[in-house]
Length: 78
Image (cartoon, rainbow, N blue to C red; front, top):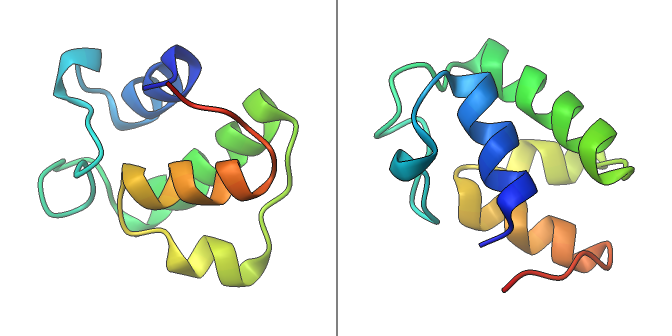
């Protein structure tokens, strides 16, 4: 997985990078609140120099969704 993605999610959600995987989301990260979802999207937009559409933002349920949308914007992952 992309180190930058893990770092951003880890920082916003205040969890160890070791806890981040494709299934990470509100169901298994306590700090993944609706507010932090918006903070996360903002940090991802800044970190990857991309803009998410409202539809993309509403579709994000976990890290796998974030990766899929970033890949659709041309970001490559391991």
